[in-house]
Length: 210
Image 1 (cartoon, rainbow, N blue to C red):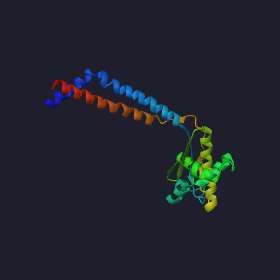
Image 2: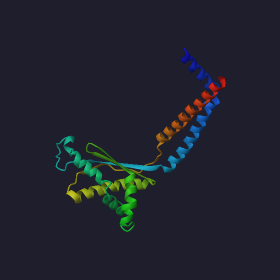
Image 3: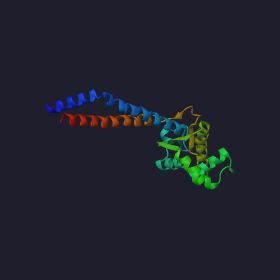
Image 4: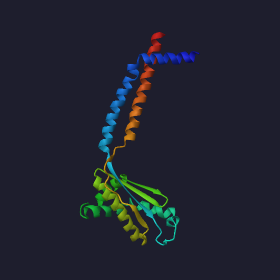
């Protein structure tokens, strides 16, 4: 009974001070949404995606899809080639010319940046490559060139030609603004002040009545 009275009491106190209980957290949440949305919009990049399959070169016409699967080790090795520094270097040379960057610039500045903006996802024998850039055209060209240079690297290293492109990247129309992250931060910015303000209101109310 006392517990119910306590809950009713707390609820009544918070309702009386609704302008503090709800208004303050709402204002903070709106401000947080604006700030985080602006930040994420400024940091947003275009994301282009392409995919390829690792196919056994000895597969015949009558073989099923399962015959196309290589071992996990081979698939993982070829997927790692996408972000290999030499592969990135060759892609940059192809897109911008061999004299545009020095080897040091590629190794210590450009290659790490491209690796950070490249995501390689492996599922069975299919590899999906995505690349983010401030330019939509650059994002498309880079991801397609990375896969092309990966195929060239495979040929030069092992003399095989198992990479078959499933889908080439097209020019992305919109930037990836990551709205989910903005909404998550906004939710936290609302809940935390709501709890803190409610606690302060209840504590002061109890002190007044005691």
